[in-house]
Image (cartoon, rainbow, N blue to C red; front, top):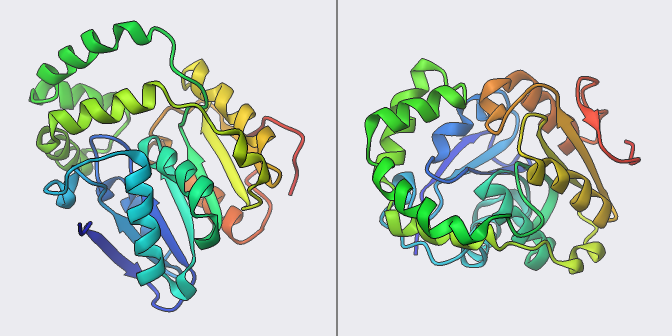
Length: 262
């Protein structure tokens, strides 16, 4: 298997691997990679998405294995910082669990730490989404709810429509039953767990749960922001990311959710 990787920034500088959310692709990180030109950025399209749409989605663990291989082959010193949102954040958690040796610092946003409530309704929800995903009007409403700027809305709609329905179903089934493993308590990789404060309770609660579980982690919320806040407030997200991976103080606008400090 061969995933598409957009490579930008400064060769031989510390590497950052960006992992996108479900139904999108590397386009969603455009405002991040342009703000980090002094880093070596590897912006990956995950299986079944974007320019990796031809690659079959197997599982989050399989995807994490592929990302670890990309890091070993393409990252400076065969190690990388990770920035993952939603699906990409869950893949980052699998990297922490199974491939911590290739990780430097990790930023994770918008994930869950326990099985989702109302899982019995999942088949109905997935059936409805199988119909809606192919409708342009649905993509436009989703883009509006995520505050996707006009210049990025075409990419959003195109990626959502091109995504395999079966891949979408597989990912959601796995995400619905995800349980953060207790083994993360022994993973010492510096990890920032974050979310927009307007996220659902299961996601904001995960910020506290995971950051408390891991020995070298911190949790914070971005006040007034939602799931795709890397786009909604790119300046804040970029400042947070740069601060975390360079061991600098986090932006004061962020709201800490545990007692950790930098």
